[in-house]
Every structure is written in structure tokens, then in C-alpha cells.
Length: 205
Length: 109
Image 1 (cartoon, rainbow over the protein chains, first blue to last red):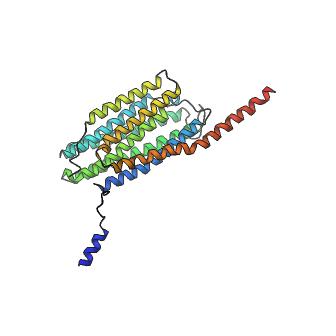
Image 2: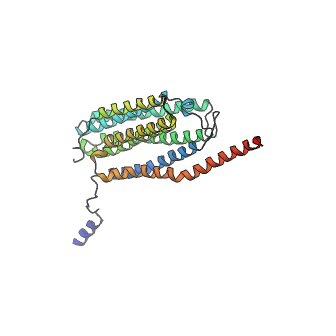
Image 3: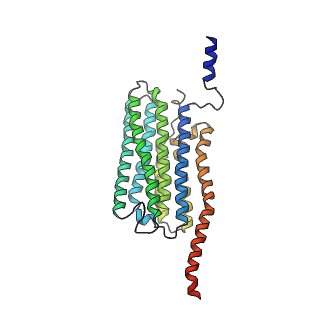
């Protein structure tokens, strides 16, 4: 019996000064760091290809920024509804927390829809993954790759948020779902943070 | 319950900062600055917005330092990557300049 107890103790993660408050949160941060490297590689590659190209189209003229500025604003708003969801949960109001989670998911859905509209519009005007009428063909390649990778993250985020609604509904005690919702929030804010970078480097610069 | 006891910062203030910085970004694009100046300003503004999101929305300011170090790692790797890619970039630029010179060279003779 005592042998079994020693064995169990050996598998338990040891408490050290580095032991996090929440393993799930640490896990999400490590995942986000890896994901950020993915985006970092895409953006650095984009930067070097653009810097060395002699006929890179002017992104502002080709893409336009009115719609994407609105999309940026929308994503910032959805980050606010996300933190509000967490705040209501910490105050013990599950109903309002769920409402704000759904607002956040709705923001993400509108964002992806606007992106689909933007892509369709640009494809009709001749921007393709392997060429375009304005100059360097890599312009289209990098545009669709980077915004597409980000759009996939938003889509995954919407699914994640909707699954969190179920998670909160299944737990009568608001404190029981706080940690999971906070971790989901980390992912969602990361998607917002990446868009800030993508918007600056692909549309504004 | 330690996490739930987290102090929630004034999120609306952060929201307004992000909105204002976005408007400033749009203003910088149209401002009569040099291309270099616009580039530097846009990068600084984007990093400032990213830092606000990470520090307040993602609570990094209120967490242990370990998480901040984890968050800063990809930024360091991305910046290093730019330097790693530079030799290739310069080689391409040199080749393009060389081709240009070869095309214009016969005209001189």
C-alpha cells in the first residue's frame, strides 16, 4: 500500500517555483508561441520577398483599406466582448458571460465573412495566387497565404468559442469554467494580435 | 479561485487606446512623411498595439514573468530570421542591379 502511495507521488508533477498556477494556461502560451513563430516566418518571408522585388504592387492601391480598417475595428471589438465574458464569469453571472461569448463568436463570423467577400472581390479583379495584373506574382501568393492562414485561425477560434459556450452551460458553478474560458480568451486575443501585424504589414506599409 | 480573484483592468480604456492607435496608423499612411519614416512609425504603432493586447487582454502584466519570456521568444526568433534572410536579399538585389547594368551597358558603347 505504501509502495503504491510512493509510486503515485512519483508520477505527480513536483511543485517547484516554476510550477504554473494553471498548466492549461502554460500549455496555451507555449502553443501560441509556436503558432506565432509560424506567423513570424510568413511575415519575415513576405518582407524579404517584397524588399527584393522591383515591381511589387502598391498594396494600398490594389487592396484598399476601408474594408480592412473596419475589419480591424471589428476584431478589436470582439476582443473587448471576450474580456467582458470573462469579467461576467468572475462575477458569477453565467448568463451574461455566455451572451458575451456568443457576441465574440459572432464578431469572428462577420470577420471571416467579410474576408470571403474581400477575397471574392479581389479574385474577380484579377488577383490570383500565381499572378496579378499589377506586378510581382508573389504579391498574390503572400497575400492569400498570410490572410488565409489568419482566416483559418479565426474560423478555428469561432468553433472554440462556441464549444466554450457549451462548456460553461454544462458547469453550474461559474468558477469551474473560469480557467478554461480564460485560456480560450488567450487564443482569441492572439488572433487579434496577429491581425494587427498582418493589417500593418500587408495593407498599410 | 486564485485566478478568478485577478483584478480586471479597465478594458474600455485599452479599447479606446487601440481604436485611437488604429486611426493614427491610418493617418500616418496619408501623412506627407518619407517612406522610411512611415515604415518606422507603422512598425512602432503595430508593436505598441500588440503590446497593449498582450499586457492587458491576455493578462501578461498580471502573470508570472515566465509567460512573458515565452511570449517574447517568437518575436526574437522573427527578428533574428530577418537578419538570417538578409544575405539572400542582398544577393537578389545585387543580381537584379547587375542585370540592369548588363541591359544598360550596351547602350553606353
